[in-house]
Amino acid sequence: MRREVPVVICFLAGLSFILEYFIPHQNVRPIFENFRQWAIIVITFAYVLGISNIVRVNYHVIQKKGRDWFYKMVLVLGLFFMIIVGLFFGGIGEGTVFFWIYNNAYSPLQSTMFALLAFFIASAAFRAFRVRTFQASLLAITAILVMLGRVPVGENVWKSFPDLVEWIMNVPQLAGKRAIMIGAALGAISTALKILVGLERTYLGGE
Amino acid sequence: MKVSPFLKSLFLFSSFLLILLINFSLSFAQEDLSHSWFNLHRINMLVFLIFFFAVIIIFIERAKVGKSLFIRRIAGLDAIEEAVGRATEMGKPVLYISGIEDVDNIQTVASMIILGNVAKMVASYETPLYVPICMPFVVPIAEERVKEGYASAGKPDAYNRDNVRYISSEQFAYAAGVNGIMMREKPAANLMFGSFYAESLLIAETGLSTGAIQVAGTANIHQLPFFVVACDYTIIGEELFATSAYLSKEPKLLGSLKGSDLTKAIIMVILALGAILDTLGITHFASWFYIE
Image 1 (spheres, rainbow over the protein chains, first blue to last red):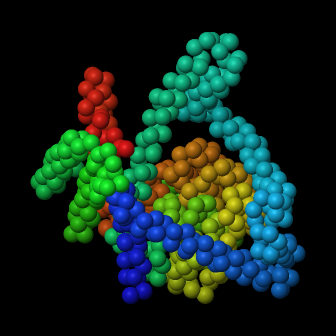
Image 2: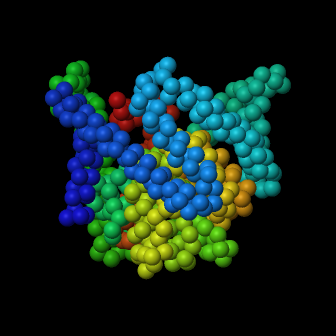
């Protein structure tokens, strides 16, 4: 029963989403909508699991005063501080304390992380475009052409540069991309089918 | 490949059904869908799904009766064991990253399946395994998969529950957390399987700077170039979903893999035919495959 019940629930839930795609009748749309609401409720409860995991993992280190215990204490205190602010100081909407802290503390940190991406892209591009093999040379030449075609100076050098770039992007690039997309989509459908019919049960654990 | 008469008949029948049903659907114009019990504009999709499922089930049946099924070598998947072995030799941990999507994404499910195999491998080498998680719903599944992997390897006592850690559901907070683990713990092997977005390069480049051997796999096309550049091995698109069959070699799973390969071949033929016919000005064939 421990294994059969989850498989049956998974099958019924999966089947309902497949049927939703094909049945547009107004009488059954609320049923599918209900399924969606249930999923949101279940996922919301999962945050309790996440919080308990954070508390458990960090509490052990703080208690033993292990490595970086101080930072872990800041993490746990920050977590509960934000929960308390959100619950008891006017909610989380615009104009609240929670909203202000989010915008002035979290958002800048997030932007900083995102900004780092520019430097990582530069270093990754430097490695990718080192001309060592035929394929790497092809990649480097294509990249240079695309870059030139996407900046105003490219059009000044040769007025057909933008057209060439459009062709590269719409024909060879798109063909390769679509090939990967079709393969991945079929792989995803095949995996979903295996899960739906209970062939693939390893994700449930307890094998 | 030698094709049985049964398979040939099924293919011909399915093709006939496909043509018949698509033409049937196009002969009806459904104006108000809210009172309809079936969206006829999507009948081609239904026929495709039925055909695809039928092919997969047939190949699974073939595999069950003991027909040998060849599966090509996937270097990235073979490299997982190499990476774990290297981490063991160096006495350093293995880091497994399952992407930033929830379990409603099939890539995360595929990642959890791979995690079980990795955990078993890691447990047999007695190497620590760290699993930072982005979505809370994935935490219990990852815990269960790792625990089961250690139990399968006969080392349930070596399982440390605290090594499966929920970091944050926020993309860049998660990336910062994972990068922190990489810089502090210096894992010798970073395995990244699942759905990744802009954080992919942040994580992979940090992993590269620590000198770890890196294997990554995703079906998110826009992140693949980043992984190709920053990782030693990259598993591309469909290979991610083949991992379970590849690592377990279970006939039922290999059968489903063969089924999707055959469907892919048919799609390639249809694409080529459609391109030729469209070029010749015959557009009716391509219109069968439009989805509203």
